Image (cartoon, rainbow, N blue to C red; front, side, top):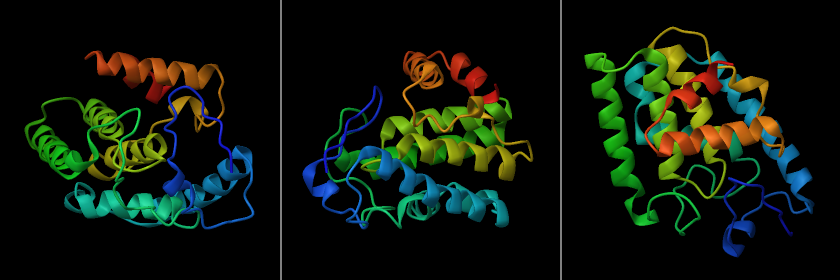
Length: 196
């Protein structure tokens, strides 16, 4: 299977591609379709479940959500990547960096360091930059932000410009630009994007 990647997407290595569970997939479009169907099931799971805040901010929950999102498509779903990517920390540091993020986020919540939206978006931004998994990190981090804002703070989930950002369009370009502004320390564009 040959995959064409858009700006901001993480290429899979050959071993990761071999882990595709649905061998009839031959195009990126077919892959996106199967992944989206699996992700919709994961979103239904998040809607039907009531998560306690202390359960959400754990490595186990973060892995479980990824497995629910992509486990019908990829054998590596829910497992940390074991290869270097065009984004993210060195793969051997994923667990440590995730622990820092979880601990920081708990501190922000307990001490009201930032407003609720900003806590969820800062978590999302750092999570996508750690890049825990071979693929699906952007979608995973957005769902995590939605779970945090709803389950921890009791607020409405983010709208994300009414897009899943899979298509290479203006919305995705705005999203990538907002992520890159966050990389520079300016989280405001990503906050605005999430609520538009």
